[in-house]
Image (cartoon, rainbow, N blue to C red):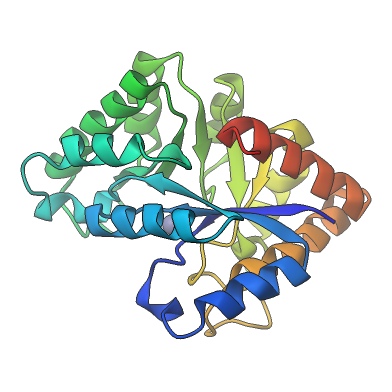
Length: 254
Ligand SMILES: [Zn+2]
């Protein structure tokens, strides 16, 4: 079994006391590659450091829309410098969040545009965070085409899904698809072709059903892969192979 956790935050303090163990447990479950996602300038620096330290770990660098109200000048340039480091495989997570609005949309937009520009300049794929912002996300990304994108922790309707697939974007699902109330997500997951699907934990967040309230970790990609195999009525091996191939190609992994 060879699986990839394409989105987690092992740079967070939640993992400070047992990071080695967490990565070891992931390997035991067949999670052989981990993409650690930068969600702030400081987090992106840590993400790059972790990628240098652990063979199986790769980094993305980016600034989450939640941070948009607290951006210091020159942040996009700092991200660009970090993006040139070894084992940095994408810009992200970047995007728009009109649901929580921890930062004002007015500040989220220029931040997103500046980091999208960095991705274009360096010819790197992007990891998109989109909540309740599909109109703006699609409008901006259509203008930025051609670009390689994955829409992480997919939420939305079948129309948004269809438009993302039409643009050639990958769709990534977290363990929240296992939640009792997630019928809507499961219906979408059923119709996504395997060639467009990635798996992720978004750890430490979104532990699967049965583990809710606990810290999530990359090892749980195994459980997610089994759940997806069941739902799509295909062999676990096929889910592992296709999602791993997609991840390797998208992030240009070795
Ligand atoms: Zn995330």
